[in-house]
Length: 159
Image (cartoon, rainbow, N blue to C red; front, side, top):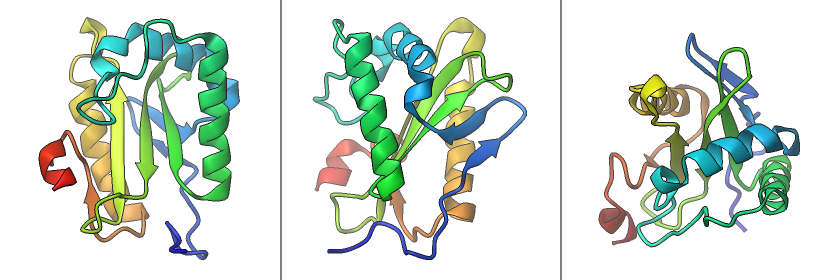
């Protein structure tokens, strides 16, 4: 079985900028994550692919807890890495970043991210995408990461 990251690689714990903090997503982020997911659900739908319907309108707090526990365990197992995007004071979840193995053999990782797009967060998505691309390039062992739905169309990713 191919490993997603080398055994010698230590996944970064955090990324801090003047506008946000990225850190491992855990079950302890439930209330803030649920608020962000449900507030942004229309904008988030399709972020994992053009036909993806997550999050459903009736997503419960318990279902989100299960998702967070799943992401936390995957991080511990090093099979994928989910990061929460928090405000600098950590009072608001601003979004999430997911670093996963690629299903396309031309890429060694698939990076998905989303952020709040409300009036008070204008420009955050572009800022986050730029910071994440640089972070992946500088800190992660991937040679060819894909950003489907962003710098690569889903159609091209799946072809």
